[in-house]
Image (cartoon, rainbow, N blue to C red):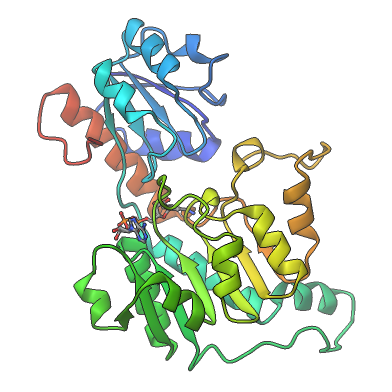
Length: 327
Ligand code: NAI
């Protein structure tokens, strides 16, 4: 199959070439897929895209006209694609529902511990010969209440790790996961907001979860709450988050995703003037750390992503049952 892989990075090329036992013909384009680059997809049966390639109805109509039959997402979330339009234009969409829930859960823990013990400050201080401890005070995670919103694959992994820390776990998810039921208690969102010392988001971005963390929900939270988001940026209303940080209701924030990340993440913007004032404001808080959507970024996950994506396309090409179709 001829595949056009967009938003390609050197590591994508390395892992996709390594896992390509199917002899698919892959062309790598570093450009994002958008209205300007759409013409590059002409003649490719499949296109392969990532989290920040936003594919609109108009683009889908154009892709279908130019012979594209399949869109392979090399990620789990599919909020960036108009799925209804794909159905209408008979383009099949597949994804990689799980490539390493451990990678994302472990990164969430990394953010939590780094924030709590201010490792980023300590690292720089020690390099400068400053061994003062002021400003580095943390809390024992043991015994704290952790609220987990979304208890699917990643939420469950994170819950298991946090259970090992000796925390009390509260969960919110419309579908209860029996493995999590054993570790803590399902509750309503309001109780989770009121009682949690740490809140971690692991649910998908959907209309009903858009800006789940907003002025109203922040007002219900415990003073000095820690908020972690390794799921999708728009689960949080950034302006409300900034307000909560300025008012000191929120104690600390760890983000791997950001509402407007498509303009920034995965690129080296170090020599440009970043125009996003909310993002720049977030970076000024001493109690906020941001990583650029790297929670998934382990060698295990990259292998799994490449292998599953190529297998998905092979199944579709030979009309076999593809378990990872988005419907
Ligand atoms: P999953 O599909 O296994 O679990 C999602 C859970 O969220 C399900 O249990 C579902 O019932 C629940 N959910 C749905 N609506 C909800 C709501 N309104 N409130 C609370 N829970 C709700 O997905 P998985 O693999 O655990 O991934 C979770 C999210 O993590 C993905 O949607 C994706 O956005 C994000 N992600 C981030 C990565 C990163 O590198 N930062 C990498 C991979 C995924």
